[in-house]
Image 1: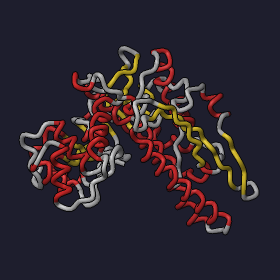
Image 2: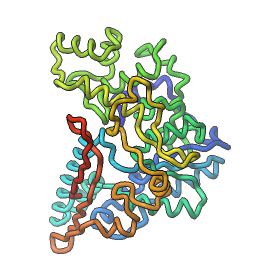
Image 3: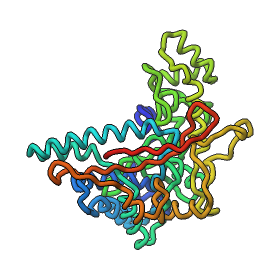
Image 4: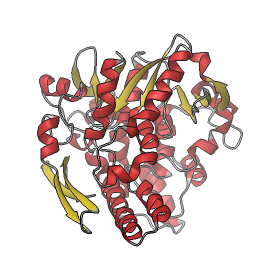
Length: 378
């Protein structure tokens, strides 16, 4: 999750602070980050399908702490799987499946401690589990929104339109999205690390003087992100070095090839697609109550099919997704989507396996968009 090496690189733009400096402000919360932290203590119950609410307790404790210091919360939850990220999501799902199988094997053999470690690595936070927290947020009258796709883009949008004053997360992707104030490593006492974009000029390792958001985004993509893996041997510092040689991606790729790097054949196209995913990913506008692009589509891209960055849906459906009335993946009410999960049992009742329908929109190497239905076993 995030851009490898980006947080250490931007260390001089970060300060240890206390959350109380945001008293009277509203902070956006990456909801799934807190849900995953809360799920560590009950990972076995989640994997075995045992009903639990312990996964939301961490979030509730953090809410109390923030409220104590006068900070309001605005939760943002991930929605459907983004077409541009489908390969990353499938790799993570496969890894979680492997860890779950190891956990169940260790549990069957009586090695509970080892099993618990694997269960932690197998956690799959579903919209249904997120709804448990959403239900509590409603009771507490705390703002929230389920993004049409990724929480990162939604949080970036909320900050841009000044509905939030900063973002609490553990994901460095928010820096690539151009966010101004990002809070990392928040503990229960309120201590945290604040990334402040206005301090980027303090960075000593590399000079970003004269760099705009577009060029910095290129740096993040070139060094490897969720939408495009890095060329083997290219990290963030080498990415910086080659961007100084050429800011044009076609020319830069030619330089890499000349210098012996193994650049995939379609890398330029995939790079440009990743750029447009950062720019035009679909987000929910809570004022207009509709799905829009994160940025206004530039004239040179208007005629392109950008569905890999998410698709628009009608306003009524968008509202129901955003408010948590329906599952953002199956597009059905939660009581129905829950019944759509096929639960099998193995290991003499020890192993409930969930086969979940993952629906996304993909655009293969053609002009046609297609709907991809994937059954992922977790």
